[in-house]
Image (cartoon, rainbow, N blue to C red; front, side, top):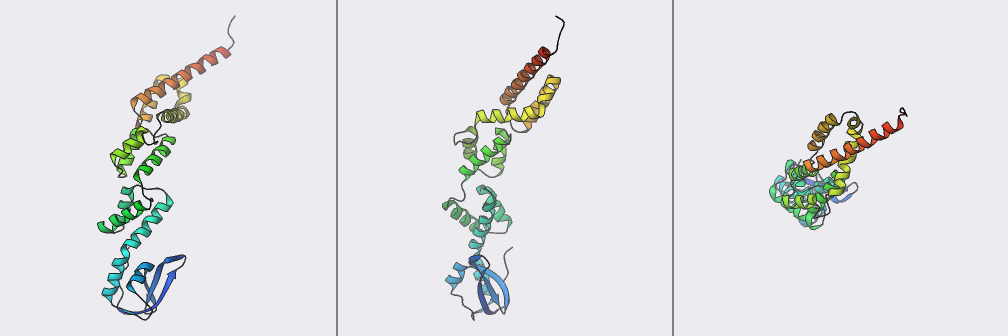
Length: 234
């Protein structure tokens, strides 16, 4: 939430926030009023003993908005990588203006902290390992505001994102854990459930069919092995 100006008064102290030399606590009349970027303090030439009106405070807080937005965005990116659309959405929800948001996005991109191509590639590889299919990955990346061109690059593997062979392996491993035993007992019923399960996770029908064939073949091999182990009449 953006701080609000206090009644006009005298600046009684300018002290760096604990652990943050880039942010300065501004005390007016002996009470903390708000904090500002050190750069804003320097540019405004503020000193202890200066009298600041409400309008002057409002102007200072406006000047501080880009720095406040950058700070919020950096804290967001510190937890994990985000898409440009996600950062824009979070800053917008925090009340920052479109101009401040655009400035922040440009600043982050210039430093390499925000890169939708990198984000899409990493997201695709991560979700593939979790058993997501390309269709679901595409849907989620588009929902996060990533350009379709970059989504297609990542999911088709043009940018080393989605690996078709690895995707089939992940889908097979996932299906094997969920339906391997059932496939041996009831191939038809297990096949129907398996198809719906993989489709909901975003796999296309070619992949579903391939996984079904693999599990059916494995179930058949297991059944033959079991039969061979049972003593019969000779």
